[in-house]
Length: 410
Image (cartoon, rainbow, N blue to C red; front, side):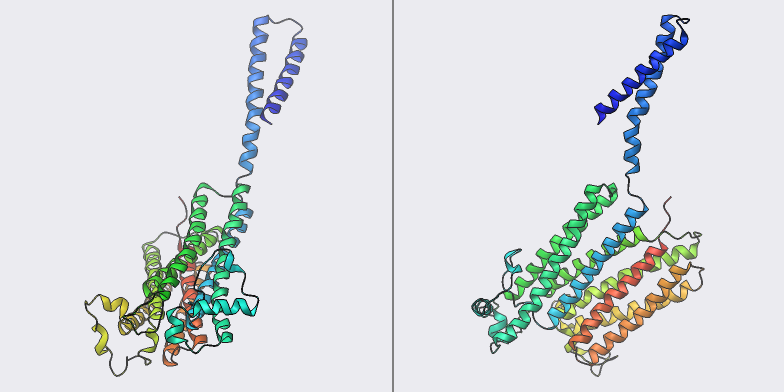
């Protein structure tokens, strides 16, 4: 194409030169008209060579492309939220250890005959969960927990494809800026890492522990890492999607607005930490140790709060301390959101930002109601799953508010 453009420009210049010579009628000296022709030739070549550059500029992503990519990332964040919720249900139904090996492609085909199901069940019988907890389980009961874990794993693969395939398409279309390329590579790499981390978590529950007589379960540390990485992936996808879809609000940068912006950032961090602490509650079944509120049993501070030694071990391994910490973080989150709400009322905010503030406080009080109800009713599966979904909804509202309050680019 470049050679064709240059040849066309040269032909055009020659025609111009001939016309000029005839129009001059030989009245100008040869050196003078040669200089003029040379100038016109240079000008024509430069303009023709610049044409592809102008076309290339026209292919830079526009607002329509940003909207498409923003919706794609919001859809991806929704799928990550679905994976988190499905993973929580899998954990609540004690289904996570039913598939005792991991193959990226091979395990995508479920057993189709009784012989294949019996072979899969036999593999499960070799591991601690069956020997200690489910030794009287039937094949039909095994099928239920197996399909729960299978659904979670297949959904995770669907999430990976939802990130990677559109990313390849948009990359080839040239829609990504340099900054977006880095973000998208990070998101795609992170979703692959998330799958490996999930299997690393499951392995911890399949290990034989002769010194322990407790119910087999995955490591609460690995569970927290798995949930935490999913929350990071969710937040990054949601934030980037909102940044592409929502135009930035025009604010007068006052000291009150700066404080509100910082307040929103710290509150979002607190909400994230509270959601992450829920992984330790789930990993240790800490929701079953004190099913009363606001006191824990008959006391505000239970006697066994620091029963483990060294003291720091209680924070991550003592079910009583883990539940106590989750309560404190939950109450602190609601208190911070309430304070943010009343502070925001003093500041004139655009309609969307005001709606984000109101939505945040509404979801916060709904979430704390769900948490208390889950505790008092001894953690029923449906209510516990709804409470976990509420944590994602609360985190989403906090991120939305942060997006509405973000600074205009200089």
